[in-house]
Length: 168
Image 1 (tube, helix red, strand yellow):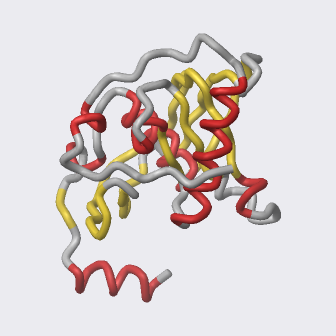
Image 2 (spheres, rainbow, N blue to C red):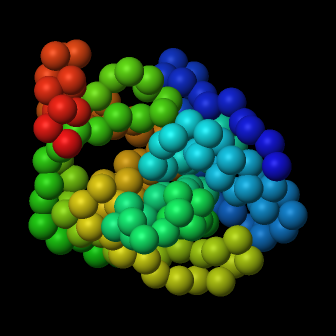
């Protein structure tokens, strides 16, 4: 497969609404495979198609609740995803591959259930808590042209970030 360039804040594609995927063909499969390679190389926990320059409703999310799996096995492919249920609230550190070096405090649901299609068009549901729930919300925001920076209550200083990383 191939690596794709991750678009960064300031690129207008990140502010656009993505179109639904209607063709579940080789082109989609190549996009998802390339996104997988790009996500793993970037050591991220999620990636949306517009972040690699494609205005389609497709995202990858790492199921961080499954520590028994390898990073590649943790990846959930979501095509035409929608959030169908949320519960609770969490507040925590959030960053983005498209906004390198910037972290903020963002409120998200503690548990999120999504409905999506797989690469072949079959519908399924997936659920996540904690970081995985945060990723579902974050990546689906990308599909509607929103960055986490719009939702951040405040941004972390370098000192705060280093302290948080020491505590983990």
